[in-house]
Length: 237
Image (cartoon, rainbow, N blue to C red; front, side, top):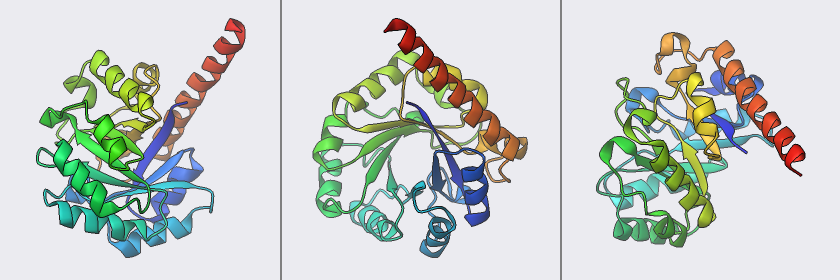
């Protein structure tokens, strides 16, 4: 069942996203790049502004130094968010670096690895991520200049990534300058989450304000797809 992830910058946006149907509220600083980390106090404020049963995440950055990245992730894990997302750039998207990250993280919290599609990452890292104790993996784009995930990877590549995640019991997600119009084509692949920021902001500006109507459209579109799948399943049965 594919769910909607919406990235927010403060508790006002967090409450808005949750009220408009976001399944996962993700704390991120769009001014600081693709995976810019917010201050711990801001993340705690976001977490505190939502119902206790809300699913949340926060990004820990994408530092090329294993120690700094692990320290950032462990600090963010103390805020109470459900998941912590770590960006694995060219230096980090290797089996040895992932294993070292896993040793440093020590199973504390629920960590999600984010691979950047515009850096041609090896997509067969899912087994290494599982062995390192990661809970899931996402594909995103580092450059936010109009280049979208569907422009960088074929449907076959995305489907293979999601299938590998599922095979190793990892949660999967797709993001990267996605638009509401991408939902149908990507939801068919059955990722656990589709992640949005700019595509749900006013004028499509990821550094601007979230558009409540756009979030509502995205949530309802995913809901319609889920309901259609349930109906089809009942007919098939």
